[in-house]
Length: 499
Image (cartoon, rainbow, N blue to C red; front, side, top):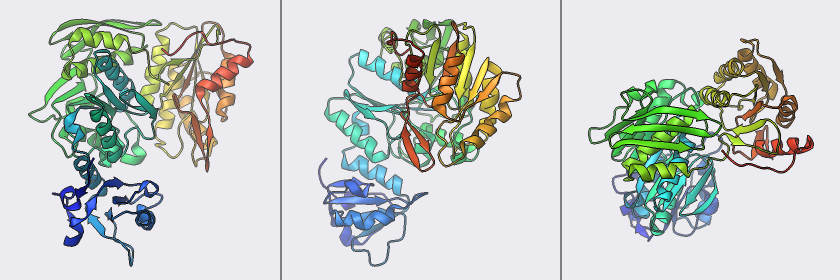
């Protein structure tokens, strides 16, 4: 990255700015006033809880040469104020220019959908690294650039953070950058102007309606990835042929549209599926022939995730055998059907499933292992889509032998009110159920009820290591809680690992 004139960074970006300001030298961009350095432009975004404009003076005190914002400047502001029509679009375009368009120096693959994004990205990364590529990835669980990794903050970071990751990867000799593209990120223009090589659609089920309002608006946000999201359309669109929303994806004329699924019309069709405790095995029929896929990942949902990853890998230049070998090397994803093994005679599984469809897939994956009983522990997040709570309760009760309803991340809501919303659905079935708002106590209750041959599913938080309560956040990890409870019951050291 080198310093650039503001006029070059602002090229084709609608902005109200004094002509003299356009000659300013800019050596960095930032949206967090605490990270501003001399010569930076600070972006003051309007926010739901607080506004970036409140921190603009602090940014100038730290050396910002200008502030960019959709908002009117405060009275007597001591620095140039650039009025842009859309702050995040401007940040994305200016970031790409300042860092020399790293999206053009790499192959970008974005995965969007309600469920399966994380596993699909992990599987793609495994394939490419196994084939000798130097990759970067970003998603719900972690960010990784050329082997360096750190905990994720958002599923899809701000555009500036993504561009910095891409630039670091490109300077490290990287080839491919893979990331989850959330509906929030698309709606908020965090990937505006990016050039994607491959866009993947996994599925669409009810989630995030507190943000989007309707399923149609939720889908429209996802669809922006296939339109180009302000940049050129992707070269390849890989879509789930068995999800009805895929038919609504209108890929551009210059985009190759590939489908995957179980039906005869899919370009990448999974056949001869064997799913069990060992994982999944199946044959993938595709335009280049037939390839045998074997993976330790469990459940039919992972047949879809692996098929999507395989098709994306082919679009990125892998040959089928190399793609299959890379998928076999993917041992699993933190918090996705992750086993907690302390030598107990029943299976304990932690999973991120926090939507109706994800919970259904999780329990069905457990059922495929032919357990004596399935005991499901789950809750729903507070300050989020309330409509899915009874639906998740009904799904859990319909497919489980015992349901224990607890808290997830209640946030500002009363946990008992969330539990009651869930119970509306649970009570539509005669399935035995119990309530325990304290999540640690609920895990103890479930493990205490388990007997040899059972499967205890702890759903909702997966890889997360904290719990968000009203006004505070506390350390909490379902996996550690389960290990502590199992140890209290007299079980020993872990024998196994992640699935």
